[in-house]
Length: 357
Image (tube, rainbow, N blue to C red; front, side, top):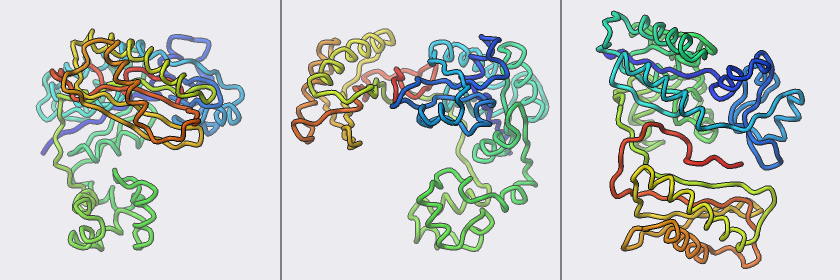
């Protein structure tokens, strides 16, 4: 029987800012770029009481919480704190699978310091995080990753929830079916039409019936409804792509997009060169003012060899889009993938650069 933890930092970006700026403690803090086209990266629990949450348009957040303090994100600082937290994880197990800067799975079946139970390990890790970073974390403890992730959200913030093997069915049966990973609004509607509102309702259907309706994912749905998840904690995560994109304050012309792609190519190339990464595939992304989005990619015979080379390929890709000639663009981005020599990265994040989105 495996012992799995899911550790999730509480309102991570906002909590780091409140830690470093005492005048903001106990007040609503919104991490993001204020502006008509920006979104919230994170919100403190004080801001969440007003209905503010991550990925919400910044303008809506400002209407809901006019007294909230907007702070531009500092991802370099967040990555440094995240690295420290992962060092704490490493004291207890080498099996750490980061999901983002603020959460990770840990397999503590064989805990390195001799702590006998997973629950005690989770509490020790939470204490060490609080003592060393002055931040709080919530933990889920369970026999597998699926259950541990659900559990970590059960007593947020600054809580620990344990699902023991004999409690799995009792815990799962009354849960809304949307708690199952992969069940988004569209799938939830299909399940509702089938008379399925809770995880327990899924037990009426056989594996074959779910496969007939959902394909191979039906088996996964059948298994998760019964608390079955054999996926291991995988400590080696390789970054598959690096990219930079930005939503502009006003829509811009294709000529202005080309200038942006040229400038961002230099930044992206320098960052990848510092990490000794050489990508084979270049991707350019565009979104028009009326929200039509498309990407174009190219894998040249010879990988880009400089920032200028990357910029040349990126701007050439702009000619391959099918948008009308006089279109204007609200978002543009360039990225690289298919690396020649991929290396394990210290951190996993949403992107190399974070612009307004």
